[in-house]
Image (cartoon, rainbow, N blue to C red; front, side, top):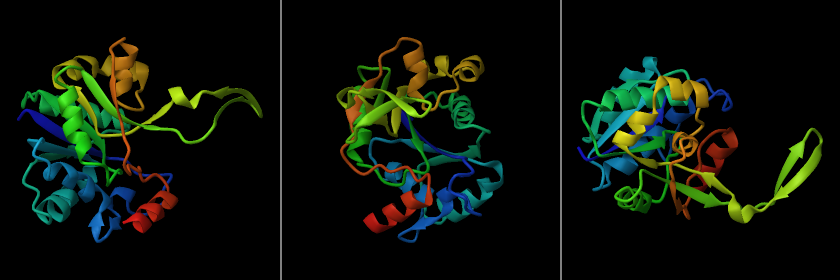
Length: 225
């Protein structure tokens, strides 16, 4: 398997304040995480999919999502960790036996994105260790200290980071050690490359790629779909 997608969906969604974790709520009759997996299932550029969830939801995902929607590319559903980076670490350790060339790591709470991103990222990974989608910021950004503005940032040099984020598997395996993640506590996977002085290629993400964090995000996606 040359290109494997990792769908990280082990979060409890505390900010969402729902009995059922947000990734299992439905949009258009399908669970958010099921939409996320489908993006890779239908892509000819992806050879396999690994899903990472909270331990108590492993059987639920296997039976009520993978089996229900007949996803053929899913290698396995494995246990996640306390933090997102712990879940990614578990995924990388699991995939070492498969020895993929590249992995694309995606948030299970991002159900929709432009499928062309998959192809573009994989093409860039021929020449770069890391490639991630980013989006331009449309608002004026203020840096603050306490209750006062310190500086207005130049938004031409600022982007929001999205997923899927693509990486050369051998290189991310070298960087994703327990020592590094405990020290850096990466909020996304590209941070490890940045901290080690490695260049991260960017692709401008022009489409809808909302991460469901709050109930407002959920409502917006339901309206858009």
